[in-house]
Amino acid sequence: MRIFIHLLLPAFLILFSCQQQNTEKRGDDLKVGVSVFDMTPPTGYLVHKVKSDGVLDSLEIKTMVFSQSDRTGALVMADLFYIPLELSDLIRREAAEQTGIPVSNICLAATHTHADPTCYGEMEDYISKMGSSLIPNEGNYAYVAQLIQKIVYSIVEAQKNLKPVLLRSGFAQVDGLAFNRRHLMKDGTVRMNGGFLNPDIVRTVGPVDNELGIILFDDKHDKTAFASFTTFAMQLATIGNTTKFSSGFPHFLEQELQKYFGNDFLSVFGEGPCADVNHWDITKPGPQTGYEEVTSSIGRKLATGFLQETPKLERMNEIFKVSSKVVNVPLQTYSDMDLEWVVSHKDSITPAIVQARIKKILSLQKLIKKYGDTLPLEIQVFMFNEETAIVALPGQIFVELGLALKRDSPFKNTLILTLANSHEECIPLRKAFPEGSYEIVYSLIDSGGGEILIEKALSLLNEVKTNKTNSY
Image 1 (cartoon, one colour):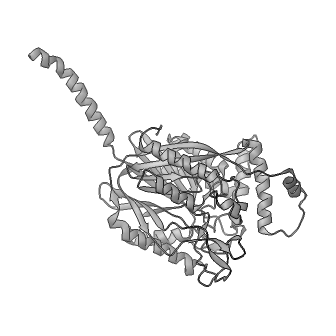
Image 2 (cartoon, rainbow, N blue to C red):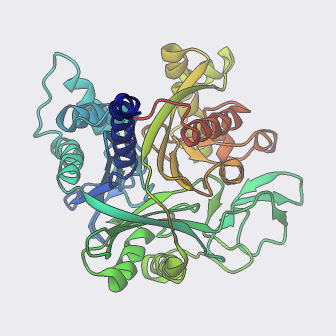
Image 3 (cartoon, rainbow, N blue to C red):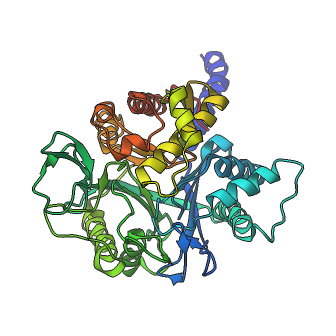
């Protein structure tokens, strides 16, 4: 009997050791580090295509780095209108080299502020020269050169600030802020923003999503909240025409949260699927724009919803994973006649919608030459626990697509982030294409492309949840 026990003892010790190691791995703390950097250009730099003459509130780069066991990821939100692919590729590559975070685990997204620095042409030219034998004169590209450096350094700095956290998540219902902007008119057409108090409007043709998605991070040691990530499906177009830089209503959201959680609290906001949603209530008089009149009120109402929901936010054991995949979606097409019209177009005064059509055909020509008939789009999933995940998507997504993804997601708390890593144009749902209007003209994706993107995003969410995909 003693011999039998003696023989079993090594096996038992090995089994116990493995179980202990597995338990320890499962019990590793989730660590989060944050950083914030000012990215406001000097006065005189273009703000949303016009010369700036001041600052309403600072434009910022807000970065969160996540780490658990051997898995790391980074989420960067920049106060830009969109993220050019060239910028995303450069930032992710350089940040990966400096931090060891895999390129596929780094997400760079735009807040979509409409009081942004108009730096995109300058940025494309600068990055193009960086990748060639030409050496750009940084004096001519001072702002974009510094911006690129700051974004990369923000990831490095956030990684240095990693600390153990506890995580809470959920949704706050915030009604009365968001309105679908596509309206069915009496003549049978669908129009974007049909007009305030317009009797020719029959109804809106789509829904809204009134849920403010919340992930709240508490310092594990002192149990105080120090950062949050939120999403809300409404465009940051509340200020209207402005000559001053601003991050929009997320600034006021953070101000109110800092009153409750402390001045060092960092509120990171990302725009949810809202290509067809804005803040205009057409049943009331216009213009419904302005910094103090509208923007501040929206930010404060979101903060009120956040704080009311805070005691109800759910706490679960943290399980961090990151995964991504690239999906090819069909591009729209154009005819030889379309291209001939674009090349020969000489009108000095051209309506914005016609300018958009011209730009679209030229963009399609460039993309088809580079990729063929389909456009590769990247999807990322950041899982935080069994019920909480962020899914990052490129482009401006129709709210209906976002609602469908949340409805079918295996995660109870699925926060959808848009304008991530590349692509600024609208990604409509299939039924919107025959309806037409602004969002279709501004889309490069063909009918059904939005549904393909959402189907693949749902597949990736399921794979991450069931551990059937490679995550790092």
